[in-house]
Amino acid sequence: MKTQRKNKSKTVLLYLEEHTSCQHYISDFTSGFSLKKYESGKELSISLKKQFLVIFMQIGELEIVSELGEIKKICADEVCLLDYEKEYSCKVIKNAVFTLLYFEYPKIKCDKYSLLSLAKDKKELEDDIRILPILEPLKIFIENLNLYLKNKLMCRHLHDLKESEWLFIMRGFYTKQESVYFLEPVIDSLNDFVTIVKENYLQCNSVSELAEKCNMSEKTFTRRFKDYFKDTPKQWMLNEKAKYIKSELENSNLNVKEIANKFGFSSPAHLNNYYKKHFNTTPRKKEK
Image 1 (spheres, rainbow, N blue to C red):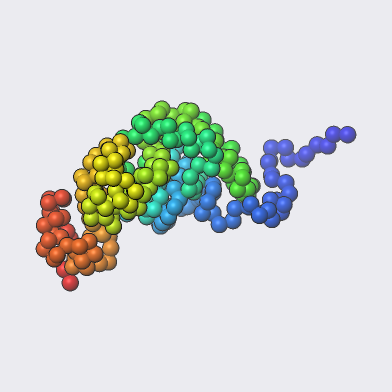
Image 2: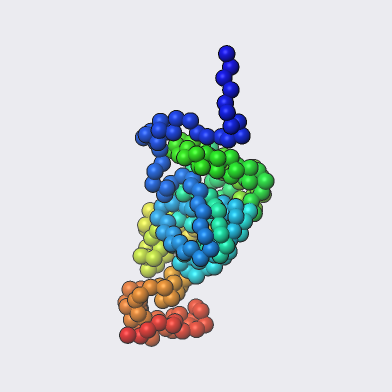
């Protein structure tokens, strides 16, 4: 005999306790997907370590500021990627509903290899906040995903599969140029060479020192560096260090003298001259 359910229009997860008691149930909300709702005026701080954060915006508007001062607004029907090992501050401009995805790297090898195949098309852009429109296939994906989230279906295996499905949608329904632009930080993280460079350049005072960190001769290192970063190691290191020092001067609690010592300048005046040369102005920081 067939049994009929009441309230056919309402979909509710059955046996919730079995799901929540599973060892693979996600409870910390710093991995996998989660659904968020905030009212206008809410301020959020985001500190990413070894994780990327994707924001699927469905309703409202957020203003996002990176640690280097980049400011962008993400609106309804847009998707945003925030880079790992970065800090961001967010403010809800209009009442917002959005889905978050925290992830470290693609869990499925096919996804990893597919992303690495896009490396040849990278442009080495410097955006800490990357935004694309949500196309119809991605919109359908989010609607289905939210059904799981609203019913507390937080199985880690399911979330890994949904992460893979999202990456498939990015590669299948967005152009290569769009996919590369959006996923470039993820692509870089899959490359050990790029990761070693980005984790060590601030502690190195020369190209040869950074090449040694990568266990390469300076000649081999320079050739490979140009392939990935589209610039010479020396010029890239100068530019990146300048941006980092600028961020420290503008955002840290250290004064000019302390920052000069931290980065090996002989005096605050030396740091001021360096800053003026790169940014055509002097740093606005207390001298004492």
